[in-house]
Image 1: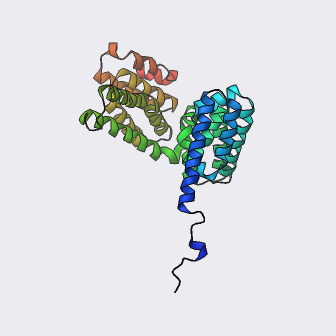
Image 2: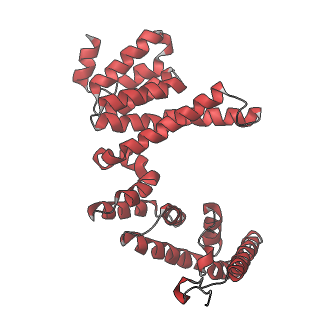
Image 3: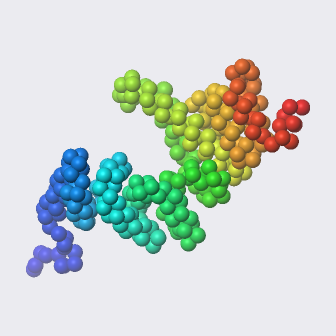
Length: 290
């Protein structure tokens, strides 16, 4: 009795041959980067083209600064980069692609000076009924631009993801405070991480709150504001939350935030918040001052 697998179940490429191919790709990719660093742009591009033409190169990709350097110093590279971008975009238009491909495509758009293309293609996918997983993988990279444009409704089914990221940020911050030695970070690294979480609270965090206000989910917006203030309770945070509420036309909530800040701080410590509230429409501002 033959102890052999049917032909269709056998590996099409022997394991060692596959490993050898991957090793060669890695080596050629390293050589290409070295050529780029040495300003041998034509040779570097030729080597990159060979690498990325192989299936085994899927996990390899150049950082944006090196792509930009290649395009800036060797104009023919822009045509090749654009072709790589277009090939990835075709898959997305067909509703195919994962987060890695989307990340590479978005990076290429930025390097080509076409950041708006990511948003334009997303809107096409939105209109064509693309699956949530694909749309959200792109939204991860552009949701801030959509919020700044006040197109909040597009973000309605993305709000839980924004909440997840915000809560995760708060948990990481609390963990660093409560268990400073857990991650075995040096003093400088720990300070950097704490500052990074504060920047998130002041930036993306307050924008998450703005989206919740705009979508009329007061319960979620209130929870977001509370979590952000747990990272830093200060005039500048209140000012950011007030600005977001006003942008979202949640005027009553903006006034409530100011009153909450007034309960905690003296007028001298609320200069930014008092300035932010002045963006209220005249009618609401008049009611506040009565």
